[in-house]
Image 1 (cartoon, rainbow over the protein chains, first blue to last red):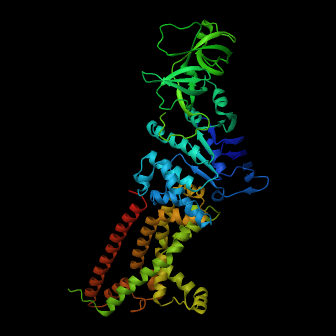
Image 2: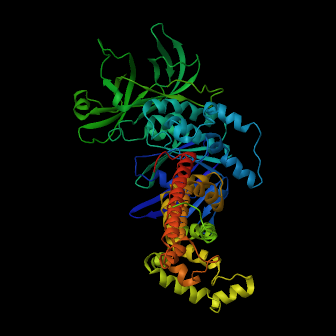
Length: 370
Length: 234
């Protein structure tokens, strides 16, 4: 799949001016609320007609203002999972799931016979089939919505913050299903989110947006690592990790490209590849090896750069192993420790967030624990 | 007093039911179409169109009846055309009574349907489009089922209005026993003659029972429909 977008659109006082290209299995549109992410996916779906530009999917123009091409929504073959499930209240879960298939059948296209059962099993919704949407929980409804979109056999699946309306527990319940969908169905996904952990966990390519513009586009670790840590609590480094062993006291040993780390049990087999988010606010810097400290993870590092100060804070970049760590420190601490590029130091990692499988997983477990 | 109805009274009752049912059935598709236009379309002159649809609600019924006579009368332009090409005659026929009843109930019908169309979550329609449904199928498979309670409510209102129609009917198709004499006009006739109080009272009673029955039936149907389309309350 290759998606190329270059559109401009004026909506009241809001101006969208976005261009990016991606051929990743999962592309994340990332940015704060109001940055134009939803407007952009609506443009991709055809629900909003931009004033200029074009949208190309695998070389086919879905929209091209110059050539006066605007393929209608129902013929784009683009699935859409909205923030709210938007299930049809008058239809059972089974009929909701079958809606796209019936439309395809009316247009003369037939799906594979076992497709329905496969998607139902993948999303764990077999027990819900005869219920009405009104009787579903938020997480159940969203899973049905994902299944409904998949069963319409889309060439591209848009997901607009599908977890935004759910509480933390429900989010954790759905994320593994999203990973399974991305890995097993081979439908490319454009995933909208303002959550760094979600993006790191799911996406190959990240398109960062702000004020209607694309501010960065590239691999997840590069884009997330490039975020301003003094402005965002979730900014930090994305590390590649391999499960190296289980400790007797319940900790898991990981080999990362920044060095060995101990994290709470991850429930993954030995050798499993993971992605780890180390937030800049969770990294401390010491000029000498620390003693009498409760933190378990201390990595030798070298200061590589010091960012521009923002209020009392400043972001310090450290190289550890082959990775770059980010630390959000106070200006006073930087002066006190006399930190400067080239200076050796120790990075103390207070906490890290397990961000999911790295690389193409051979057989993802839909009940993987985050 | 007993409920032994005279043949005239029985005829009036059946005629009323037939007139009201035909009026509702015939105006149903038009009412949905007009309600859809008013709820969804924006064009210059929509305010005027809206006012036109509501006119029968505010005009004296006699005026509406007279206008119908001017348009659909035997020698009137539209009336003559319909009689010649389709054999459809309105003047002094029960069909004319149905037309008058339909026109009088039309604004109520449209209002109820329009409100329910405006209440439909259009995001559901967007969802249907992304699932591959062309606009017509979105309307048939999503919007229409969701506005069923509104159609039902509007239909019952229009039916009740049709059963009670008097002014426009009498003006347009007169008060002919067996052809255009409905319960309302029969009661009027009985009150104008000596000794007519008994029959008038019997028909009044029947009228109350029919109206009440229609309302109860519609409420029951509406509840069932709402449950079927997943609305727990409105």
